[in-house]
Length: 221
Image (cartoon, rainbow, N blue to C red; front, top):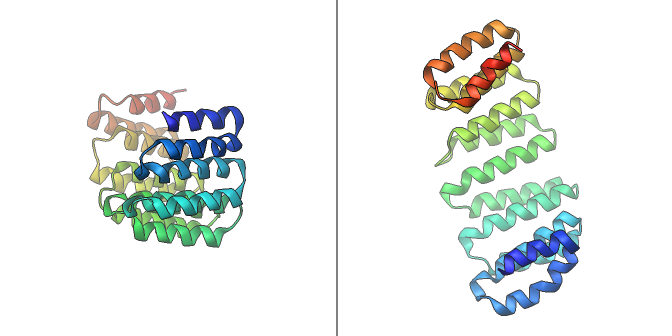
């Protein structure tokens, strides 16, 4: 309930209200959750652009949270530094998050790094981060989908199509991947004809996928 209160307080009154309620929350809940209160304060301050207060709460959260969860604190810190224009600090924090993250969560850190590098306009670094994400334990088709969308946003339709085709070799029954490939072919040099050909293949593989049928309908619009 304290966490609900803190989030509602932020919505209504901003980060100052979260900071005001934090001492009462810490006095009322078990010590194992104190780091999460500091994390909530840091998040609220970050959204408000209060970097000094955000850094202070991040430091407290990092000192008190379990080591296997500390990577989450570093991710928040990295975002806060990025919003303030400190790209180098952001990258160092992401590197520390990668060190501290358990193996099954490494993919989340790699994706955050990919988003960061794209935001900074570093396409090469973005692709490197996606490559690392694909190599992580527990990665799934959603990593490919985000990679596809990134290439499309950058105007690299051929690279996006290649990524989609590689993804479908591993995940042939995923409708979201097929719909992305149909859309990419529709936007590419092949136009509606190439999109229709891909749609027919998709309909055979994932006949019940609503995303695929929506893309098929869009071909004829």
